[in-house]
Amino acid sequence: MFLSKSKNNPDAVLPKVITPTMHGIIDYCHAAFFFTVGLLCARSQNKAAARAAYATSGFILVQSLLTDYRFGANPSSRLKRTARWMPCLPQARGCYR
Image (tube, rainbow, N blue to C red; front, top):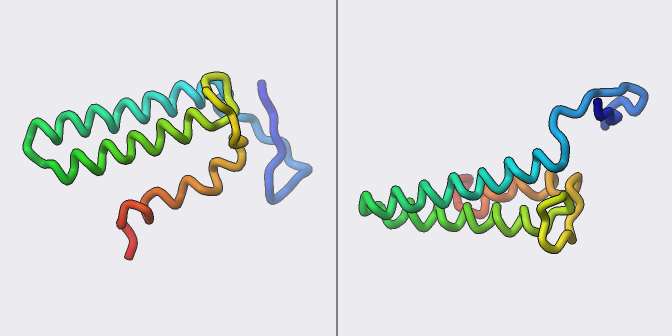
């Protein structure tokens, strides 16, 4: 079992839920899901939703390609650092005003 230390309590040992390889697979499935949603929205004549889904898919795909796990193409971003900037995605799409 993989173990890591908690941020708030460095003495506490917590089990990791998924491996970095599984995290990479989930990220690419996540990008494929949004691409499929874009295709479905384009077929139903909802062009704005299709563009948003394609943009989200592209953002997730680029983030996945740049992260340092097994399936990353050009790992320049640490997996731990990715969690810090992922919350900006809804704000970039205009969900919060």
